[in-house]
Image 1: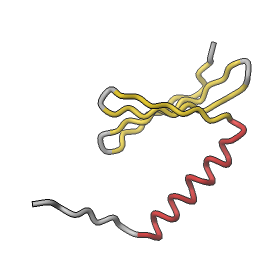
Image 2 (image 1 turned 180 degrees about the vertical axis):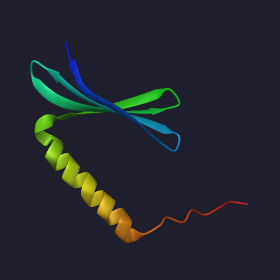
Image 3 (image 1 turned 30 degrees about the vertical axis):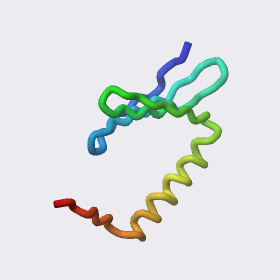
Image 4 (image 1 turned 90 degrees about the horizontal axis):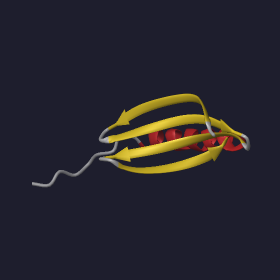
Length: 76
């Protein structure tokens, strides 16, 4: 049985993301679930990989900031 240690939810545009830090007899893990209109996809990250995951996310954030604002084309 998984024990829930932390649960957070964020809404980004039309997507909801659930971040659940859990623990079971094999260890701790972060479960990230994306919900788009009732369709859910989930990834599990063992706690031993959370620092690497955070570093990679930080690199993506920095690259996004350096690239600047995204301008979307509008169709007529």
